[in-house]
Amino acid sequence: MINLAVIELKDIVKYLVKITITIVIVISLTKFFSSFKTKLNIDKNSFLSCLDIEIPSIQLANKEENIKTNIQTQKPLKMALDVELEILSSIENVETGNDNKTKEEKESKKEKEEIKEAETGLNTKVIENNVPEKYTSEYNGVKIRNETDIKLTKEMLTPNVDVNTKNIVIYHTHTCESYTPTKNYEYKASGNFRTLDINYSVARVGTELTKYMQHYGYNVIHDTTLYDYPSYSESYDRSLKAAAKILQKNKKTDILFDIHRDAIGDSSYAPTVKIGDEEAAQLMFVIGSNGGGSEHDNWNENLKLAIKIQEKANELYPGLFKPIILRNSRYNQQLAKGASIIEVGATGNTMEQCLNSMKYLSKVLSEVLV
Image (tube, rainbow, N blue to C red):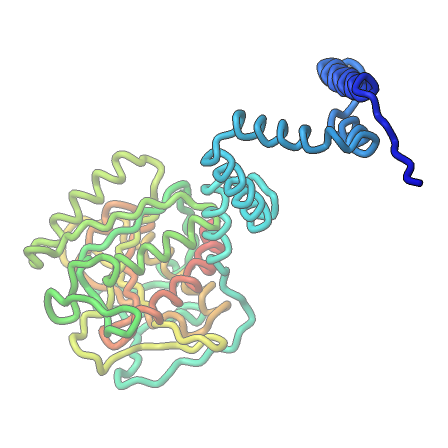
């Protein structure tokens, strides 16, 4: 015999009604709890996940609703940008160490790291050259070549001079003077060892000295105007007027350094001293006087300060300075009692050697100008 199960239509309808009621109740409860999730502190995703497990028939409906909601509330381009920005932000935080330092602070730190003060206690040796050393007087190891008719006494040479160190003025009467070019300091020449580019002339040397002196806490006024161009013969007249204006504006100023290089016009002469493992261009004070008949009340104080500086240089870095030259011309040094010409190297020296000199000179000055 064959057994047949007979299912009445009303039973099917009752079953479908029950399922429909169950689904409606579940969906209603889901929306009810979702609308109050912040009050009840219930996570919607966790609740729906439980429902998905218990009633698999609504899992697909939930997924479709989530996808539809995300598409409506977030534009694709915004989503992509948000992701990229989050990645870039995380990379920047790693590279900067999660700090908030400004660009100016970082540049200041970099500048400070570049300034390395000169060491002391180093071995020094003057490299032989083809120009013999000449001098006529000496005070405590400081040699002076007196080219005037002034008879220098011990009192004239004793460096008992005090100067105001509030301001230091650096300028260049012969601003275009330059050096033997190197790979790092090639320049367009405007004459024989001359250039209009202040990044390759003695003005660059003055900038280096300025940087170091500021590092030691001094206020420095550095004038890089071209006073020897276009007319070389009138350079001292132009620089005199400019220096006088600077001093008038900065009343408390005794220190006036006119930085040059030796005028010998070929590359055969390169006065150099080796300090430690570095080569540095030798320096030389040129001091004016009233020996030529022009009024110059400050000349002896200028000389005393030069001797005082060179005494300390001989102590720290013997050979850094050549003998001081005393001449009849004033060289604008009548303007201040701490005025002088400082010749940095000669045409045969390189810029690298001259920049090294400024590191050692600044160390000497920092111990004298206190």
